[in-house]
Length: 161
Image (cartoon, rainbow, N blue to C red; front, side, top):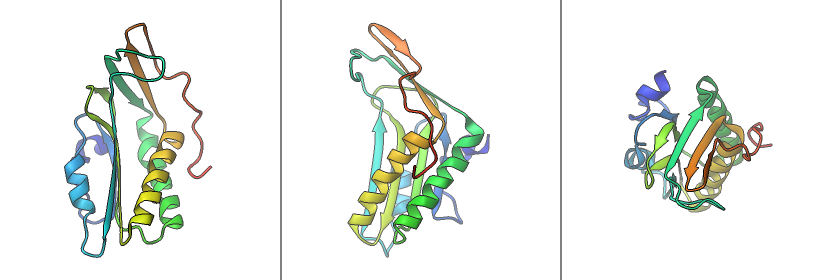
């Protein structure tokens, strides 16, 4: 799939960088790409694989699976809504990892740049929240006492719902 193979390099002709990666996410590259001379703010959210979650001690594995052909189109809808709400936003990167993610590595990044910090912070928060609720990506956790494919996760909704 092209999103997986090309996500390590930013787009040359767009202010939107979306995709999936089966390897480490390009965190530093996405931040550097978002920097522009007309922007005084870049907000980077990096969701990290951690060794615990609510009621789950000693998490040893996080693994993500996606309905791959729907991920980039749904991310595009999130970005459309984000840009409509915060028209000053310049660059947006939203990249999610699939497959196993070692503890301490990034599973998802959302990067937003704008002339002022308010729009970047608000748009970045909207971006990760909308991604989590509207993009078909599922997480499997394995911990000391069990494992789950996130059956307790919320249902997929449309961006902005």
